[in-house]
Amino acid sequence: MTIYIVDIEAVDTRYTKQWKEHLPTQLQRATNTDVEVISGGDTPQATTPGAFLNFGGTNVYKSKQLEKIGEMFCNGVVKDGDYFLYTDAWNPTVIQLKYMAELLGVDIKVGGLWHAGSYDPQDFLGRLIGDKPWVRHAEMSMFECYDDNFFATDFHIDMFTDVFDEDYDIDYDKIHRVGWPMEYLKNSLNSYKGMEKRDLILFPHRVAPEKQVDIFRDLKERLPQYEFVVCQEQQLTKNEYHNLLGEAKIVFSANLQETLGISWYEGAIVDAIPMMPDRLSYSEMALPEFKYDSKWTEDYDCYLHHKDKVIAQIVEYMENYDSFLPSINKQLSKLNKEFFSGTELYKAIADE
Image 1 (cartoon, rainbow, N blue to C red):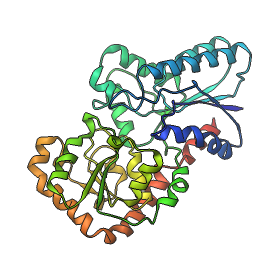
Image 2: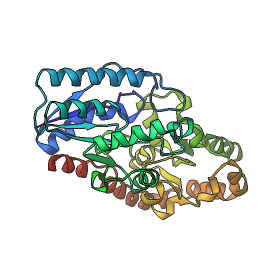
Image 3: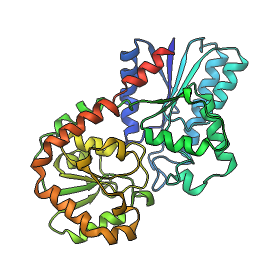
Image 4: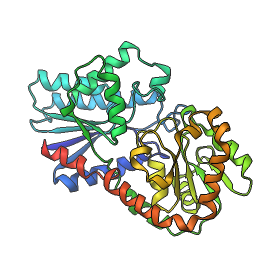
């Protein structure tokens, strides 16, 4: 058995670069199986504004991956029992992979990690394409191609199935809730833990409508005693970003879209308080002391109505930071065990 990772293109400022570096080693170590990466070559670093990849470049990248997969079948490289792991399930090349495997009689298994899609109304696909038949049929076709459909949270599974249950007969046995394979982060960020904190509050998300950065900017005006930084606007290197995390007391979110949330996990590793709305994936992941009422930031008007409550919560966290450290450690343990360990993912692949 060989495990082939059909990877997502690596952007230097995002976790995708770290996955390219760490996942093959982690997967090989956990399964004691040969692991090979099917890459699409160089990656456009300029993402489409507000998105996490380049909408043109990603298709160039995937096309090159498909070319390599086709050559592997032509040369007889792919064998019965091999496993293909797509680190982004929204990759139409999985349809051609199944086409080749089934017509050539090669018995493979395929898994995919779902991050987002048209079924999420706050995602780019959901906002710009919506429920057009072509995209819904395409996503369900990709879902059916995978023997294992991996999701990081129950919230994400429910959102996916609530949409597709209306028109499709979903095979729930193909769905697995697993942690994302990011156990490397603890070691990567250890050197930033224990840094001297300052009165710094970070917005570590993409600058996109569903992230509601305008709320954060208004809070900056209302709380001049604290420093507010929108990380993406600073064009930071990973090291510079991690230094800011190490110095920050709060990582703030008013997100309307989140199926996991890597940045607040990074913050928790280096003892930054996560301030999260009680909605989306945060509801199942965050401890009560780090969740605020979802109504406070459901949109900008709601924020204006509840602004004083948001401000009071921030001041509580900032002025009593040390008292929240035990809860941060408890929160980190929960995230490590349930959401940011690849143990269940590796087990599911090995069991195939």
